[in-house]
Length: 459
Ligand SMILES: Cc1cc2nc3c(=O)[nH]c(=O)nc-3n(C[C@H](O)[C@H](O)[C@H](O)COP(=O)(O)OP(=O)(O)OC[C@H]3O[C@@H](n4cnc5c(N)ncnc54)[C@H](O)[C@@H]3O)c2cc1C
Image 1 (tube, rainbow, N blue to C red):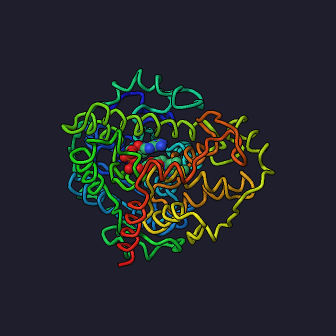
Image 2 (cartoon, rainbow, N blue to C red; image 1 turned 45 degrees about the horizontal axis):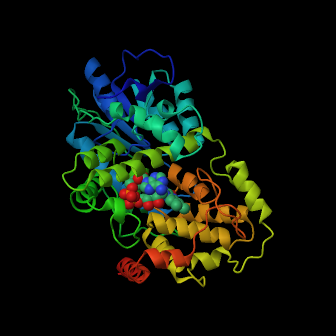
Image 3 (tube, rainbow, N blue to C red; image 1 turned 90 degrees about the vertical axis):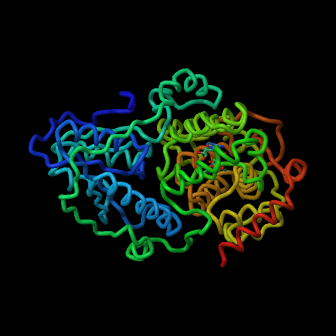
């Protein structure tokens, strides 16, 4: 089922009667299954007896993306190529600005379906396509469980304010997506691709991009790998998630955030898998679904409704005021970016977290909090700390540049949180220290865990 509230017409054009196919411009939901935008395109094509064509515009030098991100994304596109071929759908990957690639192919299309993004630049691409295309452009929201405008019509204050709004309607959206293959195969259509995604290494070489951050071995991109990880999670690790999810070396979480970021897996599919799992208690699946839906969709709400989502100035007034009051406090340690990036601070736990991030592109949620809080403590001003944390987050994490990146870095500076006991440098912002880590977790085990991960990347 595809709920009508996921679907929006972006222009008022009539279907092009001599159009040769229905075009799906794939951007956010880079997957051949569990994709409501693709299924909408297939249903439309079947109604008019047309084949389905999917296009993807691959641009050089996407802001803040480097070869780590591109390599993972190309692995996902390779899965798409295989999945589309199996379903009789044509797939064209073209070198260029995504909106321009879609516009060029819309020329011969009966209609264009696109998925939804929340970032202003990408919202702008869709708007431009809708203005210029001479056929209908229809947007389908694929990357949330509850569509962002259904959940709320404003920037929410905290998890506690959006949670009841999401809970009220989520049953309507927590339903499986039925798949239908196209009635008319696109095998006869000859669509050129400028980039052959079957050979991801060669494809990576052809692109002009920042190569300073290397691809990782720890995560292989694509829907096939995402589904394998989801399966392992619900069968083996969901049991105990509620209590174990905070332990940095326990491996108790799903490790699916990079796949969610690139649209390699659907959040609805993940939530249903956890809900219907034979393992784990209600508390385990409830806790996972709270993170996956309430927390993740609060972050999407922030990016959708706060135009300055990537700026320090968008933090709540109370947070900026208390940080300003303490901006002159003496810092015991101040580190520049190079010291941080070379994992050379006085704090072994922080250095371990940074090593995991630099070498493997991922970090456990609890350590991410500690990591960003310490950057606040060790920077000359809170504004500089915010910029450093966000830049490093987006540079190294495979799941960086996501709504979760912006909302969660900002959370460490007071967004969606409340005031705590006042103390130097942090003011009333929630504080974390190494004693807390040592008291709660086996940090020696975490250090060994990171050693092993870093060694595996070096082989
Ligand atoms: C400073 C900081 C920076 C972060 N940067 C990012 C980022 O760049 N990209 C990113 O995707 N997440 C980010 N997070 C949120 C969170 O740490 C990761 O989503 C999570 O660690 C991913 O691991 P997992 O998939 O195994 O999570 P699981 O525990 O398996 O959770 C399942 C899914 O729920 C969502 N989720 C889990 N925890 C959170 C949370 N605290 N807030 C919102 N959604 C959550 C994620 O989509 C995650 O994949 C950040 C958190 C902090 C504190």
